[in-house]
Amino acid sequence: MTIEPRSDTPTLVEDLLLLLFQPASGTIAGENTLFYVLGGAVLADLALGGHLSTTDRGRVSSVADHPPTDDLLRSAWNYLAEKPRGVQTALAAIGPPLRGPVLERLIARGDIDQEPRRVLGLFRTTALRDGRTERRARLLADVRRVLVDGAEPQARVAALAALLSASGTLPQFHREIPWTSPVISRAKEFEQGDWGADAAGAAVTRTVTATVVNNAVAAITVLPRG
Image (cartoon, rainbow, N blue to C red):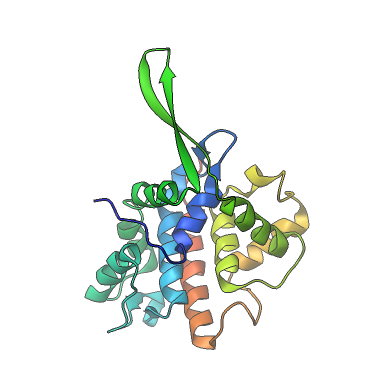
């Protein structure tokens, strides 16, 4: 089922997939772990919006009577409203269907363009290329500031940096984000939930979001990269 784009602020999962898109090759980095990474972004977005809570043993559940307005996030919220779930279970259920609908949103927004091509001069296909909005460049600059320049992150940028690092794709961003020892250490801090005091407004929201991302990271990093 196609999920229509919204006119308001893009979701965190849209931002993450846009960052993982590689304009030079027209491919998505980290395809082997993509559904876990995108699922982690949805859970983090729910946590940042106050729609998610954690229970004993790191399980997550929806906050009753507080659904998100975005249809894509609402689907995940409905699933978690049934009963508390382990983060890995939630990722396995939420993540796999996300790539197509999220990519459709990015194309509809103009962040990514589709270009018709022919293979061997016979078969029609489409290729992906950088869009007209320059939003990917702005997102990448935000992540660079916190990883390279040591800037204090906003919560969304901290979550993006953590999930990007967990995906194993950061070395592919070497031109924009040098793959150096300080950057690696800083990225690992984000993976572990060390975002700084200003990364989220309320302490409860910060704790829930860090728990979600930390568990998602743990699930992602044990997957094979091949």
